[in-house]
Image (cartoon, rainbow, N blue to C red; front, side):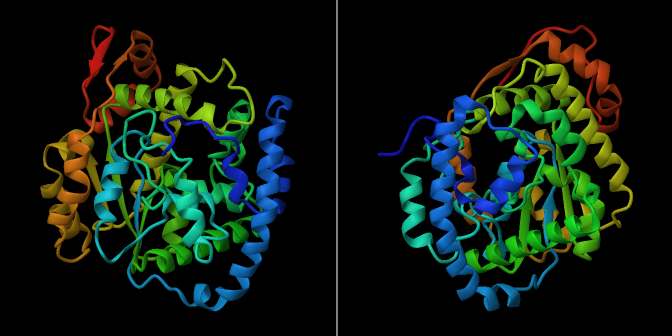
Length: 377
């Protein structure tokens, strides 16, 4: 029987090396009310460290030999803008390599302990995500930033664990380019190792990334992976901001190790959205023509298969021969699931107009002349 609640007796840090947890806790404080959950997580992490050492020794040569045969594809849209659907469709290609949910939670034992640990963990995983009813499974494609949290102490996603430190995390942990020389090299080595394991785990030849956290890393990724392709998918900013706000507040109860401060409000989310979008606009012109495609989520949802054909052609990914697989695996399921409906309140409209009016114009969306509540289907 699968769990129905997005709450867990342990933290996602169960899959992290204990040394990484110690390094993370030098920068962030676990609140006393979460000590039990944290201590249990560290105990399990220590046990898995033994298996992780075995995997490191047994798979070292195969990991080192795993090379990206084809330029990777990075989906860099803001959260709640259709990135999951696009990622799932791209990952239906037999050539695709990607990090699974299992690899993200247990990156140090992905290859050696998958046989027993993945089905066991699935029992504790809810069947659906709490914020959009998307099916969850440990074998599903997932954004690799969750694994990076478990492999190095600096990540934007640390805010899920430590929401009270959100501002400090945005300032100092959002981009690895803010790290020292050695810190940056360690981050790059960790990221490459994660991709190598993903290729071995899935058998793919081209890594497909869905990671909004990569928006401020575009320049770095271009240097690391010459010829890399980028897809920027975007959505009506009013809806994207409100959906992201609801999304993070639905995730916090299951993963947080700090209380969520009142300052993590809609205004802070809108300012974060504007910051990320401006970072994208600053970086996109440096990407060679033919290596980047921009898509409106609203247009993509009208004809996903047609847009997939165009993506493959525009980015030079070869023929798109997986339309049937895409429709069977993901589109039919996505169309049949019960969607969550929510309202975009006047506060969100007003804040987007205040902080992100220029983004509305650049993306070609209409500004709400008269702020008010409107329904999102």
